[in-house]
Image 1 (tube, rainbow, N blue to C red):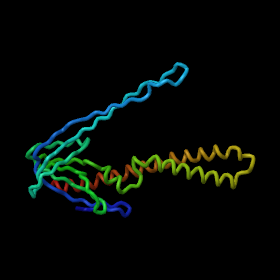
Image 2 (cartoon, rainbow, N blue to C red; image 1 turned 135 degrees about the horizontal axis):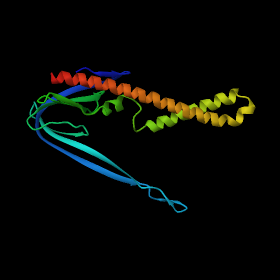
Image 3 (cartoon, rainbow, N blue to C red; image 1 turned 90 degrees about the horizontal axis):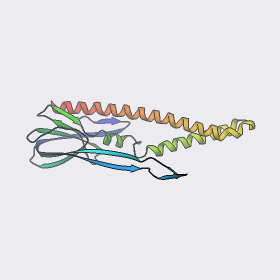
Image 4 (spheres, rainbow, N blue to C red; image 1 turned 120 degrees about the vertical axis):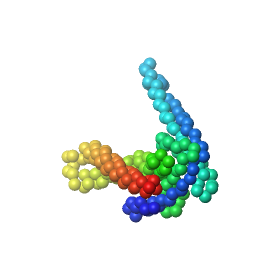
Length: 205
């Protein structure tokens, strides 16, 4: 199967086929609350309730070489039933642990992309876990550069406003960095999705 290459990083793909033995779909909802405390002077903050629902598909299948496997998919909305033939496409980076990224249902002539995030997180250095760190880092660098340039080239009469200008510069650069990063991520995800669609179509035949 064709590799996916992004800035020198190579994602390799393999596939495995088999017959569905059994399936189970269920949902779990987690509810959390915040607020409701006193802020003084007889005032209280509103209680905010949030919920998150995760749908899990469990699939038991027997591979073509007679090995039974168990698969869990989260929020993928796949549709398979016992007796149907399926194929799974797995992605791995530099031979590391593989992750299922596409499920193909040969019997129904359909496929589902089950995980783009795995590929993105392994080839793009910025992800949901470190996004805030890189944002603060870039803003701090921008503030530092602005302070250096302003203190070196601005006359004394304006020096009282230098810190304010530097902070504004940092915030402005931070907003620009966020826009550029989101654009890069969206383009990368589009390319990954296109590649997975091509592989799935090839496997589906």
